[in-house]
Image (cartoon, rainbow, N blue to C red):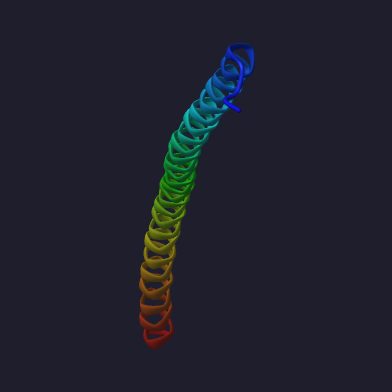
Length: 97
C-alpha cells in the first residue's frame, strides 16, 4: 500500500529539516575553523610583537649601560693619567733632593 499524501509531506519536511540542520552545522564548523585560524594568527603576531618590544627595550637598556661603562672607563683612564703624572713629578722632586 503506497504511503498517504500526509505521510509523504511529513517525510519531506523531516528530510528538509535534517538537511537544513546539516547545512547549518557545516556552516558553523567552517565559521569556527576560520575564527580559530584568525585567532591563532593574531595571537602569534601579538607574541612576536611583545617579544620584539621586549628585545628593543633590552637593547636600549644595554646601550645606556654601555655608554655609562664607557664614560666610567674614560674617567678611570684620565684619573690614572693624572696619578702617573703626579708620580713622575714626585720622583723628580725626590731625585732633586
